[in-house]
Image 1 (cartoon, rainbow, N blue to C red):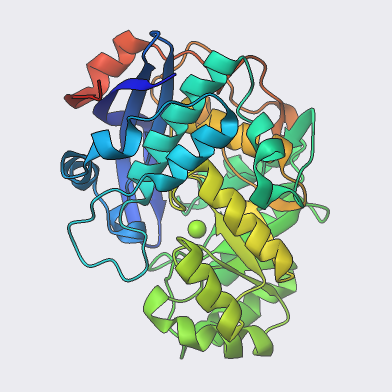
Image 2 (cartoon, rainbow, N blue to C red):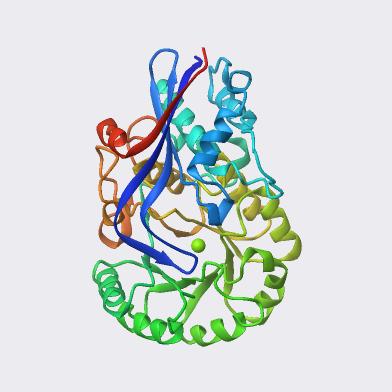
Length: 393
Ligand SMILES: [Mg+2]
């Protein structure tokens, strides 16, 4: 079966309230949604979340890259098995129109296109996306099969009252893990952590994410006072350009260090391991270039004795939430899991199914072939500000 057509939608998903962290604040989320239509009419959906301050891409860049990519040469192949589909996805090389030393400037586009292809063939073959983890050779050490996964909560930098409400809800609803955004200008993170730890209780696993807020000279002084509140990890304390200072920081402080903005693909992963920059990778499907690339990165981390979190982009729709759910249910040893915030973050759901996590952050493996979610095209049409069709036959 061949791919007949890709259709792209640039969308602005309205958010329920402003999302704020050390490097950005926003009220809507720009996404690239892709529909892949096979020759027999079977359709699949994918999504990428281009974030200029993470991988350097905007939604418009992604579309421009796709317009400059010779798609017929890359996609007009017959796929009869998953191996054929994996080969097709791995051959996909979007044209990148700017300097790209880290090989990440088309990652959200790759993710959106790849997921749409995997969803379409999953529906055609009658298999769930998570079966791919079991069939994809680079992930053979990671295979798992969980009927339920547990997501972590997150507390944004949003002022005393809102933070207290978030923390108390998380405790009341029985979450086991919580991430706290730190490093926002003007906030006293030591006092925030003291209060938040009190509200969350002693049993919760609490970690912090600084979103590149500190520099190498001040990071010790920023992090050390937080250790008293038993944080289990610090995510991206330094800007990516100061990555070389991470090994020393990691040696000096008795807390696990995670890379996020500094971990966008295999070039970053190899560099991080080479210099000993971290204990954990934050893998996000869109940031890392898709489902399969994220599996390769997890396998790489595993081989080098590092842990990994599966993260998300706040504001992603249930297309990416579903892909993340399948990934999480089929991959073992995920240290922290983020995502499926859908109803709590989005002003409107893009899918018929509401797959937001439930009590304690728990959420079941999704049923059905492909991604297992149904896109509401009337909502998609309403939030899309640009549409384009790419014919392949
Ligand atoms: Mg982060």
